[in-house]
Length: 503
Ligand SMILES: *[C@@H]1O[C@H](CO)[C@@H](O)[C@H](O)[C@H]1NC(C)=O
Ligand SMILES: *[C@@H]1O[C@H](CO)[C@@H](O)[C@H](O)[C@H]1NC(C)=O
Ligand SMILES: [Zn+2]
Image 1: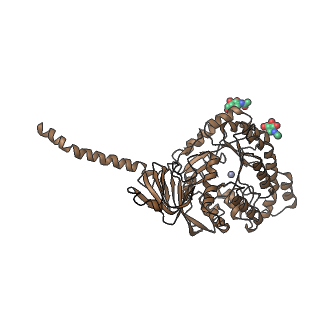
Image 2: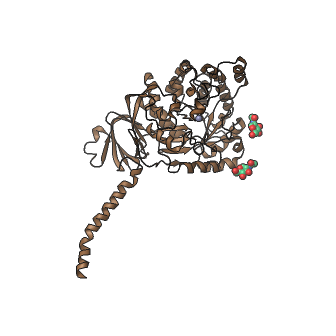
Image 3: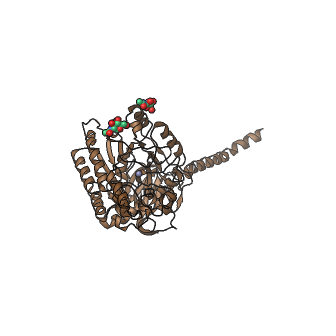
């Protein structure tokens, strides 16, 4: 007895250290499925870190998923004593991109995209948060009940953080009870169409619906995103009457002239004044998605903003990268709505973006089955509209933007800071102490050929309008809340993105 007792006690330290080892091991590896790193306290260092106070050389201290401190290189000697340093050398370390306009089509149309492939592509492209559109999933997200389906579909299947816009449709727009329930369930804001969306359970809204929607949104201080185009009879007729060649991009362009955007915006501006300080819908905000017309439509919006209406404007890299004259006959990969316009318009869009009249960028990643997109014998009128680009928006923005002398701070503003504000995400959008450690490291000077061999993680890369281009800017690594979710062709094994619900 005596002997056994003593031996048990003498073994205690051994047992304890074995237990401690396993405890330590499990603590260390518990989050490892979520991250390609094991530590949750480490530093990211680089010569070019984009902060709110400019680009610095130094390190970002990450602890428990948040930015714990920012250290300039001249101050860090003796400061960083322990922990791991992930050194990115000359690569740019920037806040992760927030894509406020992506269609992941989940649940219901997973053969088009889906949360797993879509968010893997996002991670590989430096996008750390995306806000999913209420269409083209099936059903569309237009009520508390259908939002629940979306939230369940995203569970354990997202590699980056994902929030959800809800649909404003005639069915719910005039029913404040339904809208309030929907907003309380967590949608970050609402989205509506002023022309047919192409999706049966997502009908278009008229200005009465929009006005009513804004008054409910005002109580929640959330935005209404609007697809601002209205149908005009003459456009359809002119194409039919002339029997124009549907394989020509110009034929498609004529069906959606800038006047469609302009007319929609004129109509919207009859209610946008409600969002002004002291107005009946103060607190609500109007956000124009994917503006393409850089002339009358943009001028109208500029004036309304100057008057104090709460309005913001987004455009997409494809409107800044391509122009109508370079779209080959029958190449329906470039079909989207509103359409890509001429080279002069593209220049004007860049001018407006750089000058601050356009506030932010989004992908409008809008995938479809290749059959719907391509196999229509190049018929621009029959092919499905929408451009697939999710993984490539950062290099696409940089490739054209560098010619205009665009800075990394501007890119961070268009892709992170302003989008965070629109979506109501206060701890995102910049590398600042206390914010989530949502970070992308990328090499602006590295070019790559986006050919069929390039590893694309979204579902149907062949339909992307960017395939065949040479792009500048290679994403090296992406961190979401401190988890290294992507590094040079490798993703973290587990999908640990958060579902972002408004409270
Ligand atoms: C409004 O929506 C609520 C909740 O979804 C529903 O119960 C009610 O029947 C709707 N009212 C009308 C008039 O459609
Ligand atoms: C919009 O549609 C609703 C029916 O859903 C109708 O009551 C309203 O009058 C319409 N508004 C306009 C401006 O056409
Ligand atoms: Zn869209």
